[in-house]
Length: 460
Image (cartoon, rainbow, N blue to C red; front, top):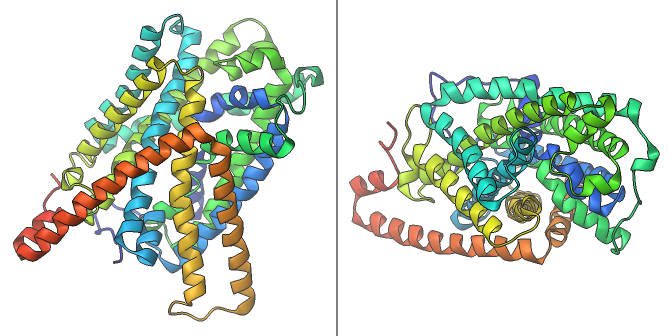
């Protein structure tokens, strides 16, 4: 049941520095530009949540490193779950991760429009806001449909611009820090544990991508050695930027103003330098950054069903590619993200970004839990290799911490997010039942039909 990518003359492996950059670049998407305002209602206790979240992310990173050492193939949680528990578990991992990517795209578009509003007022009416969000979602999709060459060009420019406002606020904000702006340590009536859990559930969105090196293990040079290191280094680097940036925003923007902000980094720069020019510049850079993040995640969200479709676990139509891009996956993904965005706005949801982020928190924990369960299975069963007792104890402690961390995040996501996430999962169960029945029929029919069902010849 191994999942290997076919070699390509265009493929090129990358070492530890590039793998680390891949992890860090995918983690630092666009959510960070809105997250300080999202966690501000909980108070500065959310900084504690950042620290706890970083520790949990590192535990997951180490587990992914161990799994990549055992199964150094492209696919990440999908591969690990399928190797340990069979097709159904692999399907659930792929399905949940796919949901995470396109719901994340919807959340990123909502965050981007918050900064677009600084340049062109759109939040005055719901129709204008929805129209702006849809435009932001579909522009990266058009870029993807044009081919991987254009995807790469957009990604390169946006990655450079991404770090300008983050470093400006993270470092410059410390020189304008005012303790009076911080507000209360615990701003809600929740207990300390409840407040940390709730804010950490929102902040997990900013760590999505920690699995990037594991998902791309087949393209990493010496994956058994480099995947784990790249994941830990990338997670730690992102954590430093996140923590300093959020702390600086907390210290430069008054707490009351931050709670209702749709562009907290813009407000921070305006407070630091006065006037509107700095905030406008940050808004432009943030908008470009988040559009670039949407560009990359749109491709990733199309590649996930493409990989599963090649194994016969997703509908065969997802295998179709054009100019290196799974076109059907792109179109389906952006359509679903658009429908979800429209639903959340028209349903009267007050904080659309937070609702979408919490849904991805739940769906992301499914492949994370399946991956940690796979590692627990491999450790308990012994597999085909003998493991030193000390290493076995260490790995068992790591997998226990990662599993407990993932379960804690599910609890912190809240009832509404779990409710929507479970509905998505149940739809997936029905899709799997249909796909399993179809594969059974094809298996009984003949070799030529089996080759067709597997998606052979689907690329163009």
